[in-house]
Image (cartoon, rainbow, N blue to C red; front, side, top):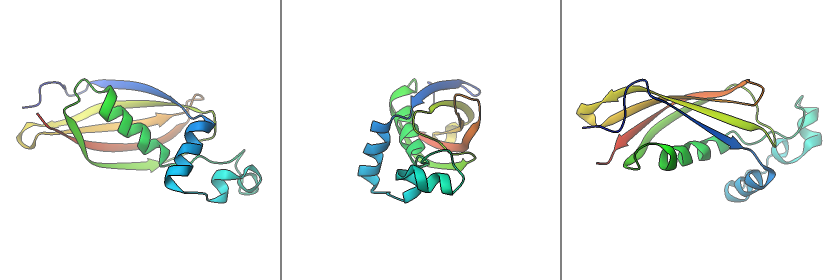
Length: 134
């Protein structure tokens, strides 16, 4: 039985997209697409500067699930993410997560989420299914 979560509960977490974090992600993922590492290339493609890899948001989600929820007794089963706008160096991303479903019979919690930047632009939306490991 899932006891640490209630339908409709919301959680918030901010993430600062620093150059150090982005460079570590590039080192780990080896994603060196020119749009991610070269301002001139990104500008030629219509962006204000190099675009941060979208999958960095998955790292933020992993941290949030593992470290910020009221229970550490959970694991991610699946997640979807739809990117709406680009992320740039030094953006501050605000993650909002809402419990959109609790399914006691299969020990599953469904979370809906979105990231917005400091200007309020929607960056991405998605769903995460987590399982209680209690």
